[in-house]
Image (cartoon, rainbow, N blue to C red; front, side, top):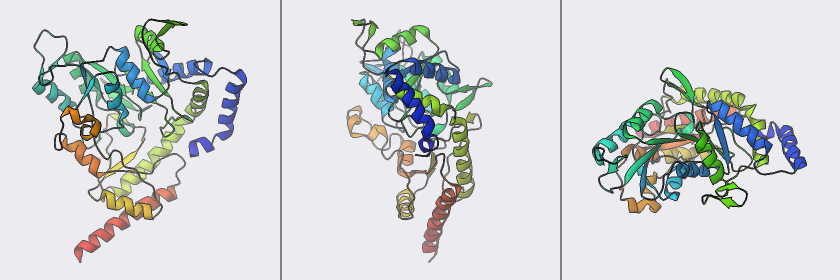
Length: 387
């Protein structure tokens, strides 16, 4: 991994410093990281936790979401988003995505609330007419490094009295023009959640996560929940979980933060080459003009996805499929009653999407090779169809 290899000595020193102190959980490094991450997001508080999944789960729990509630989210993202909702006892409600950005479509959120919910009863929340459950929150995901459309999502949430919890696991540092000024991922909702999984733009040497918020009381509650619900040692006001960020990961992340801007610029350069060279051959990902992306993944779409993937693999080029089966069709959600055809755009993207290599340290020669092999693949296809 280039980002680790290129600063190996610095990382070693950072880890040795923690070893020397002998305090490994929720100590000074975690505190500094919490402050730095909060500051970079433009909010007041950061709460370090053990993973991005826990960040989501604890945010939902801390906001009172649980048994019998429903939460609107996207079917097209990593499974943790839906899984965290289910782990609280709540039920995910999936609405379709936008084909250009792969992000949740605000219009589909509005449609669900207008067409399938009773919003006129005395209830504080919209009531799903089919399930009779209260709909309490929206979890938009900032997928592949760009923000979901937070202005319309924020308006819908305000109109229907819904909480917004941002899943920014893939979007640390991405920003969006919001009511005239740029704001960072994590600053739009009641809570923003991040993952420091090693493959992320800012990744640790293991699992780690963070919740950001500007609400002081909520912060105190989250700090308690991440540590078994203790308000003082051995005194528990709630049943929490063990989800603490460790000092070694915090030290590693603080070291890497200094290089993040440079690494994201490298990703952007690769992104631009792909965009220019592949635009005629495949559907390339689009970044909305009000968005500043962090270029986490470059995900193309083509109906010949599987054949192209196989061909690139033969040429030693590794690609990845995000995500082959949308959540509403996963076996574990059979009981929710979705069927194929319910969310057509997510289903189509699942069949057509392919992520090409994009990471700091990827040589431009290799990028050119990917473009070249992709071009040759489509040329041979058109050549066959002409014969």
